[in-house]
Structure formats: structure tokens, C-alpha cells
Image (cartoon, rainbow, N blue to C red; front, side):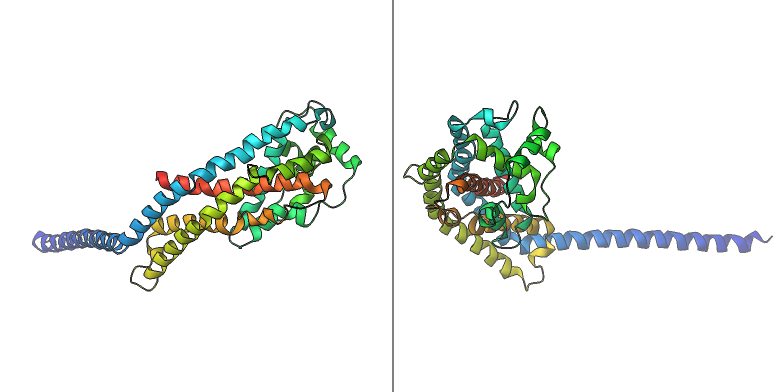
Length: 309
């Protein structure tokens, strides 16, 4: 073998490999530099949108603080106060406290509404569906069958009766029907009537909700408009907001919460039933109103979470 011929050939191969490695390294550096440049350009391009988002979150957090407190009063304090009307002996063996029944009921309604947030009006229709569509056929025999399943159980009644299907009417779900029968049987109709009427007195919980919502709604709408306007400014630029995944997601979550508050939690939706005179349905009005307020509180939670980021 002629080593004087092999050595140059080997050195040439090594040089080629070294050149390839250098090219790859150079490409990586270049790509990283390009990425940094794009990130810098993106941050610069979206600085105004970021500032608007931060300002709106701060203002909204202060704006909804009172709503958060009132929502707690309605869903928690009011529920406890209603226990004075309770006849627990009619709720089966070792029945859950009435406040827990109410809590389970309005949480079911709020969760049931959560899948409809993209269609305006759909969430509130789901919450109010027991009133709008009725509960269908109800019998004492059905209530007794549900009691046999729930009596003596210590776990969540949803674990016993099953969680409502999001694709079916909540009024057909055993868990919600159990809540319905509990409220129907444990509190007299005349007591529910007085509870509903008192809720709309000047200092009543729902009248307070109405007054507060009327006051903050224009500001909620203004905030939504400013956020939408900021997104639209970037729509036809080199870097629309969708290019900035984190900022885009924050905008979308905040706008979704505002849409839900403005369109789905308006006090007018329950005020329409203020003079409802069907005593057998007035406990459903109380429950569905709590469901609507609970849904509003969940949107407030989105705003509060955004303010902590």
C-alpha cells in the first residue's frame, strides 16, 4: 500500500467532515440568531398589545372584586340562610344539609353551561333550561327510587347517581333530578315563594346582583371592545397576535370570560322571571339564579387568575 497516496485522501475526508460539522454549527447559530431576532421583533411588535392586556386585567380585577364578594354571598351565605325552611325528615335517611343540596345543584348547572361558552346565549339557556323546558314527568315513585340509591351513602351523590352528560338535557340526569326532588320535598312551596320575593326586595340578594351588574356592564363591554380592537390592529401585520402563542391564549381566555359575563350572566336573564307566579317552580328559579351567579363567579376567577400571572 502506498501511504503517500492514502494519507492525502484520508485528510481530505477528515476535512470534509470538519467542514460539514462547521456548516451545521453555523446553521444552528444562524437559526438561533434568526429565532432570537424574530422573538425580539415579535415582542417589540406586540408591546402595545401586551401593555393593553396588562392594563385591562388590572382594571377588570378591581372592577369585579365586588361581584366576586356578592357572588359568594349569593351562593354560600344565602344557601345557609335557607336552611331555616328545611324539613330534613323529608329528605331520606341522614340527608345532606340543604345548603349542600343547593351547592351541588347550582354547581351542576354551572358546569353544564361551561361547554357552551362559544355560542352566545347557549350557556345561559342551559342554566335556565329546567325552567324553560320543565322537568318532564315527576313522580313520588321516582324520588323513592333515587332515595334508595343515595340514602346511607357518604360519597358524592354524583359518584352514586352519575355525572350529567354534557350532550343531554340536564333535567334527565339522575343527579340533577335528585336535587330537584330534595328541594321540592324539603321546603314548602309557600316558603320558596317568600324566598323568591324577598330576593327582589331592595336589599335582596338578586336585586343587589341586578344593581351591581347594571353598574359594571358598560365597563365590561368597554374592556372587551378595547381588547378586540387591539387584536384587530395586528390582524393584517407581519406578526398577527396568533404568532405570539402565549399572548394570544391570554387574550382569548380573557375575552371568553368577558363574553360569558356580558352575554350569559346578565341580571336581565333572571329578572324576566321576577314576577313568576308558579309556586311549584319558584325553587327552580332560586336554584337556577344561583347557577347563573356561580357561572359568573367562575368567569371572575379567570380574571383574577390573569391578574396574578
